[in-house]
Amino acid sequence: QVQLQESGPGLVKPSETLSLTCTVSGGSISTYYWNWLRQPPGKGLEWIGYIYYTGTTNYSPSLKSRVTMSVDTSKNQFSLKLSSVAAADGAIYYCARSRPQLDFDLWGRGTLVTVSS
Amino acid sequence: SYELTQPPSVTVSPGQTASITCSGDQLGHKYASWYQQKSGQSPVLLIYQDSQRPSGIPERFSGSNSGNTATLTVSGTQAMDEADYYCQAWDSSTVVFGGGTKLTVL
Image 1 (cartoon, each protein chain N blue to C red):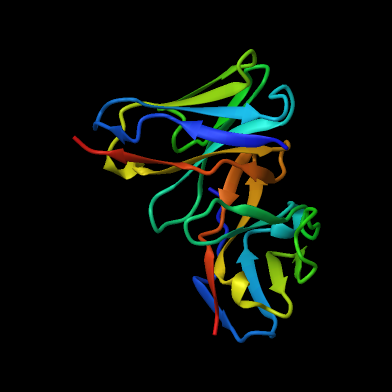
Image 2: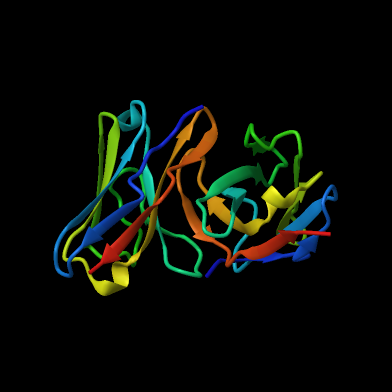
């Protein structure tokens, strides 16, 4: 079955750029919408944005100025870059699959990113 | 910006019915989804399109959505249902989550 796996550095310095990749296995990335979400320890879920396999993106208004998403269909991967990070950006970052304007039906296991010098 | 409001906590006795609400302006005009997140795990989709259950989700989980409130109902609650529950909807091409409700089975 389709699985998602996040990867990337677990520690990022303040003011630097957080970079994560999500690998889609067991299915094609050329359908559905592919999302990034995050959850600060002990807090709720926050949607960061999505990318479609065509490269179309939609970002959360609160993070839009710092977020860039990209997709590599040849590798079945999509990626997140979040610039100028601060301590408040420390969280578990999840990639997830969604249908347009609907639900998130498949999630990765999440990866913890800490922002610290 | 659009907001979804959930009670921070709900407590239920084993075997009883728990109801978790999610309130938002005219939420009934949007599709609501519900997620269960157990400690240390990723969220799992419980209910989509207000009341639909994905395959593999027990029948004791049900959902409704009308007016300004979506409700997740857990019938015959079991100890394994103790978790955080989140509602979610789309508003103007943006995803909104409720703050989450901790369900305690005591």
